[in-house]
Each structure stands twice: as structure tokens, then as C-alpha cells.
Length: 297
Ligand SMILES: CC(C)(COP(=O)(O)OP(=O)(O)OC[C@H]1O[C@@H](n2cnc3c(N)ncnc32)[C@H](O)[C@@H]1OP(=O)(O)O)[C@@H](O)C(=O)NCCC(=O)NCCSC(=O)C[C@@](O)(CC(=O)O)C(=O)O
Ligand SMILES: [Mg+2]
Figure (spheres, protein in one colour):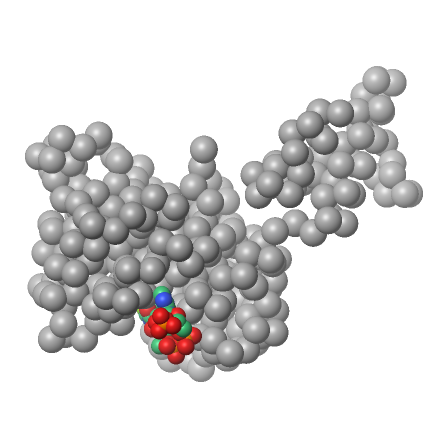
């Protein structure tokens, strides 16, 4: 079964209370942060706290992701060295570039061998948050077969571009498009940047819908109160599911008559429409919104 990543909830790695409850908040993935949410003086203690948390806390309901520091800082290699030994599901690499991903993959090869873990069991996600990283996203994903997804970092990216970050998000339109397209081409997840106003639910809903509409497959969250809104945007609606099932039924009937395309409510149904409907029904089944029996009826 593929990992579901509609929401990836960030939390500072130096906050024991947040780490304690992280597995039961309803997010698909949790990101225990050792990078920007942790001050320089707390880097070592946060690393130890995250390591001990992964060992002691039952996180079986969620994907456990640790955001390590960049590999070209004094903290990054130590983070990978210590955290990989307690086998998180995934490491998130900030300010990602090809060399950094390659280096992490090599370190993981070595650690997995030493620890007796299956080779390749620890996955990598690339945080794309620089102009160079964005332009290189294809090669960054290709740098290791461990890469399962990309997270777009809108705050750092706009800082690197020297432009303002707005709620409307027109300044990251190209980045969202590029990340979504390349991720789809390489069949990895494309996760949207967090929406930072934790009290603006309407804004969050609009922002998530915008990202989904451009092809992103999930969204980072920074507060548990954001999870429900994001999940509701990423779930197909009842009306969408009903229409997808009608399309599949209509096509089945047409095929019985030897036709390769047909029409429903005056609109043409052909291969791409079927592909979209099949995908939506698959998602509905996966999220428990419809059953296999309904589809097979
Ligand atoms: C914003 C705020 C301080 C508000 O706190 P507040 O306490 O006012 O919130 P409340 O809603 O009142 O909390 C109610 C209860 O939920 C608990 N609770 C809250 N948040 C929780 C959480 N995240 N996980 C688990 N539990 C949580 C809380 O402990 C309390 O528990 P309890 O006391 O038991 O009732 C808090 O959410 C928070 O710290 N968020 C995470 C911040 C963070 O990780 N940032 C870095 C990552 S982003 C990033 O780096 C992106 C990027 O890379 C991308 C780019 O480039 O764009 C970049 O560079 O920017
Ligand atoms: Mg960042």
C-alpha cells in the first residue's frame, strides 16, 4: 500500500509535549524538525529528544519524517548519523540539491548495512526552497531511488527570490506548477508549502484548493487545527465520486457495444476522462468513502 501524504505536520524537535502527542493528531505524516524550528543552542538536545521519542513513542499510525539540517552545516551529518539508526520512515532534506541527496543516500546505505536494516528502507523527501533547487528538481529527485516526494518551501523560496510572500500565492504559482509536473512525471508525491496563518481556516481552504488544482498531492501543516481542512479539500466530494462512477458505468455500457468513446450529459467521454474517473474512484476507495462492492456492482 502506498503511503498517504495528504497532511504532513511540522513540529519543533525540541518540544517534548508535541512529540508525545504527535501520532494521534490525525495527520498522515509528522515532521519532527531539527532545522529552522530549533535554535542553534538547542540543536544537540533536540536531536537526542527526537531519537529517544522515535524509540519510545508509538507512532505506528503515522509516517515519521525527520527534517535534518542541511548536509553542509555542522549539524546535518550528525543528524543523519544519529537519527537513521532509530529507523524513521523518511528524512526530509532542506534546501535540497543533487549533491546533498546523493550524500544522504550514501550515508543511509552505510547505516542500514551496519544496523541490519533492509537496504533502501529509509526514504528521502526533498525540500525545494531555493531558486536553484526548483530549477533542478528533476535531477534532485533522480539523485536517489529513495526519494519519494518533494515538499515545496514557499517561505524560503520567496526569500531566495527576493520577493514578498502573499496569502494569494501568485508568487509561487510557477513553483507549484513545476513541482507538481515534475513529481507527476517521476511518480513521487508533491507536497505544498504550509499556510502560516493558523487561525484563517477560509484562507487555508482556498490555498489548499489552489494547490490541489495545480496537481499537488498533499500539504504541509504547522498546527493540528489545520489537518481537518486540508483533508477535506484533498478528499473527493460525494458529487465528484457519484459522477466518476456514472462515467465508468457509461463507458462500460459503450464498450459492450464495441465503442471506444461515448457521451454522458452531452459531454464526450474518452480515455483521459476515464483515467481521471478511475483515479478518483480509487482515491474514494482508499479513503473509505466508497467500497469495492459499490464499484464492482
Ligand atoms: C504556530 C505554533 C507556535 C502555535 O502554537 P499554539 O500553542 O499557539 O497553538 P494552539 O493551536 O493553541 O495549540 C493547541 C495544542 O496543539 C499543540 N500543537 C500546536 N502546534 C502543534 C504542532 N505543530 N504539532 C503538534 N502539536 C501542536 C499545542 O502544543 C497545544 O497542545 P496542548 O498545550 O496540549 O493543548 C505551533 O502550532 C507550532 O509550533 N507549530 C510548528 C511550527 C514549526 O514547526 N515550524 C517550522 C516548520 S515550517 C517550515 O519550516 C517550512 C519551511 O521550511 C517552508 C518554507 O520555506 O516555506 C520554512 O522554512 O518556513
Ligand atoms: Mg525552510
